[in-house]
Length: 307
Image 1 (cartoon, rainbow, N blue to C red):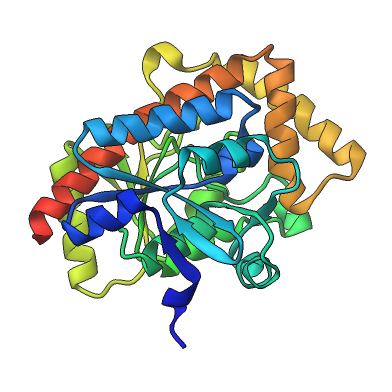
Image 2 (spheres, rainbow, N blue to C red; image 1 turned 60 degrees about the horizontal axis):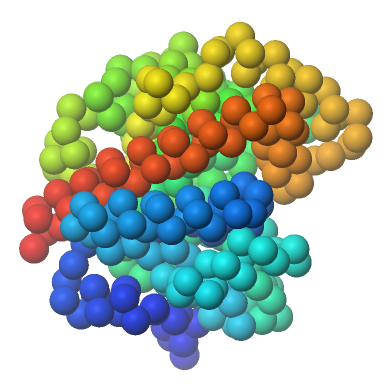
C-alpha cells in the first residue's frame, strides 16, 4: 500500500496541485505549542493570507484522525489553536500518532517529511531547532538538523531559536552538508535579533537567486534541505542584552525543574514571553509574518523555473 493513503489534501491545496500552482508548507507546532490563544490562530490566518497575496497557496500541515492533513480548514486551525491534548510530532512520533489517530502538531522535522511526501519544496516557519546549550553533556540536539540533512525541502526561518547554541548548530549543519543562506544578509539571524555573530555560507540577494540555487542543488541530486535565514525586521527586533539576560534566567529555571527533551522549547518560549512581558511574542509574530513574505516569493520564483 502507498503512503498516499495517509495524506489528506484540503480542497484549496488539492486545487492548487491540479492547477500546478506554487505551494508553501507551514507547520502546526507553532500554533499548538508555540503561541497562546488567540494570537496563534490570528497569526496562522495572517500568514496564510500573506502567502495567498504573494501568488502562492498555503498548506498548514498537521496530523488528525489518522491522516496527514496538507492544508487545514478554519475549523481545524481553531481546533489546533485551542486544544490542550495535541501531541508534538517529530520524525520519531509520526507513525505512532498516525496509527493511534491522535491529533498531532508537526515540528520542523515532521513538517519537512510531510511536505516532501506532498511534493512541496518550500516551507515557512519561525525558527529551526538545533543544538541546545550544554549539549556536550545532555546530547540534546533537535531532530530538525538531521531532517535538514536528508529531506529535500527549503526552510525559510529567522535563524535558530536564541535559546540554542547557534555556533554549534551551524557547525552541525556544515558537517551534514546543509547550505545556510542569508536572505539579504551575510550574518545568520538569531530569531529575536537580526545578528548572531555568525556568518552564513552564501548571501541570497533576491528570491530568484535563492530559487535558482535550490533548483540546481536538487537537479544535481544533492539530497537534503537548505536553511534560508531571513532576519526579523529591524524595527521589530529585541535588544540583545535583554534577550540574553532573560534566556539565561529561563534556561536556569528549566534546569532546576528538570525539564528536558521535547518539553524544553515550549517551556522556554513561554517563560521568555512572561519574563519579557510579552515582547518575545510580539517579535515572534512579526518574524513569522516576514518569513511568509519571503518564503512565498521564493516558492513562486522556484515554480517559475520548474514549470
